[in-house]
Amino acid sequence: MAQRDIKKVGLKNCGTLPDFGNFVLDRTTGEEYDATKASRKMMPFARGVSAKSNDFDDQGTNHTDYRRMMKIVLAANYHGYLGVEYSGNILDEYAGIAPPRGSSKPFGPSSAVRVSF
Image 1 (cartoon, rainbow, N blue to C red):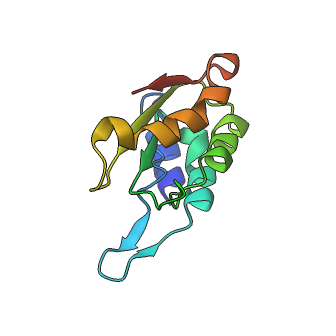
Image 2: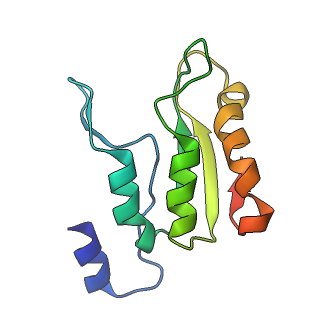
């Protein structure tokens, strides 16, 4: 639906902002839309990408698979900005961006994705 609307507007500066950690359908139940599916739909129209992270478990795992998401970003031939942000409650903002930032490093200069922190 959003894709149809963006095409209808027909402006180069009108697009989407796929946000890895922001596909919540119902905050009371925690139900989420599949982030990989949503990102695949949104990437052809992306004007920016947000690699949002939340809190991590003891093994450093977050519910977002950053490698998988970055593969989706690159498969769409995206060469814009990748914003890295932390939305959790446990770590400070700098510590919270470390895991997603580390996941994006191999995709950095050689892929022409500009990572912003």
